[in-house]
Amino acid sequence: MIGEKGYNEWYKTGTGSILSFDGPEKGRIMVFVEDTQGPVFDSIADKGGVYVPEGSYVVCIGRPGDILTVNVK
Image (cartoon, rainbow, N blue to C red; front, side):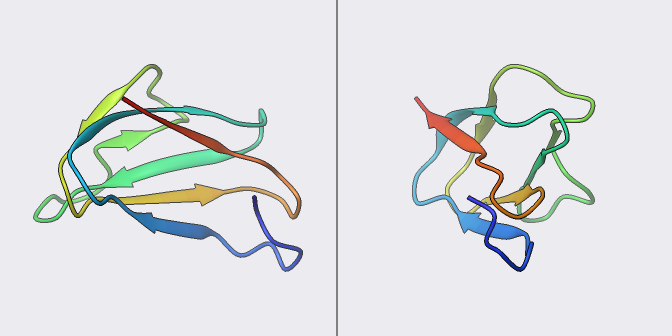
């Protein structure tokens, strides 16, 4: 959930896994992997799941109160 101040929420993956995402139309989720330039997943352009290795970062961007869901397989 995006907090009342509207700050982006950052998470670090603990294990390698396949992630997929759900969220509001105006929300955005991006995945960054160490040693890459730019995101390996951006919900504006990408759909479906993405494999992320351990230690990757997921950022959830939205408006205060938005709920963005990260599904892990």
